[in-house]
Each structure stands twice: as structure tokens, then as C-alpha cells.
Image (cartoon, rainbow, N blue to C red):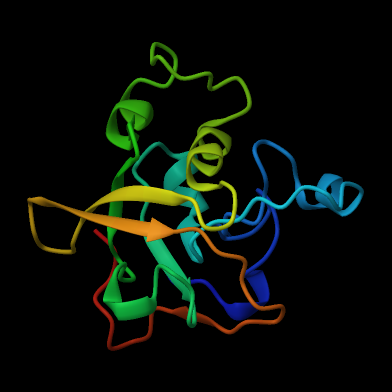
Length: 160
């Protein structure tokens, strides 16, 4: 499932987790706290798969964002590690995992993806149709206001 540009921002209500939230705070809370300057790498994840515990699959990328630059992350990639966070463990055992999932799996994942501008996050990805994990180190960066979001097209392979 792809995501449209109109859903590229927002919290849990959107079709994907756009990492526009900051460490468990929704967009409305951030608007009241202008000093919060956390950012991500410019990728959106399918929130329906997250909610169902079926994985963290990239559905869209911010054009020119860290994830999109140089093909570091591709639409359809499954995110299996975010730094030391094992996303598969989190999905398979949310109640017994070592992570605090009281606010939801997507919040745990957003907390891992977000950080100070310029800080590095290491993503472990499984590319569509492959079995080995590839790692990408990306610098978090703020996205340009009104940036364009690229989503899957009819020619793109569907997420796993």
C-alpha cells in the first residue's frame, strides 16, 4: 500500500508513521513546544502493518531527505533494526519485549528514529525479495517545509 502526499504529515491517524512526531509527542503537542527540534530521516512507514504487528515497511520518502539520497532507503524496504532496537523482536513480542510499549509499538519506533539534527541513526533494512540485512548510517535532518513525498507507483514492487 502506498501513501499519498496528503498523508505525509501527522500522527497515528495517517496511513503511515511519518516520523513527524517527537519522542511520544503528537504534532499538536509539538506545536506548543517550539524548542523541540527532533527530526528523522524522511521516511514514512505503513501504520496498518505496524498496528497489526506485521512489520515496519517503508511506504514513502521525502524527496531530497536523508533516506532518499543516494538510494539509501527504498520504498518497500523492511526496517528490521534502528540502532540497537530489534524491530522484529518488538513486533513479535511486544508484551514481553525489553521495550516500553505502553504507548504503542509505533511510538517506540518513532522514538528510535528521531533525534537531534545531525545525529546518526543506523538502519538495518531487508530489501524487497532479499534475505540479508543491509545497514545504512544516516544523518538526521529537518525536512524542507512543504517537501514533496515520493510514494509507491504502479511500477514499484509492492511491500513484502
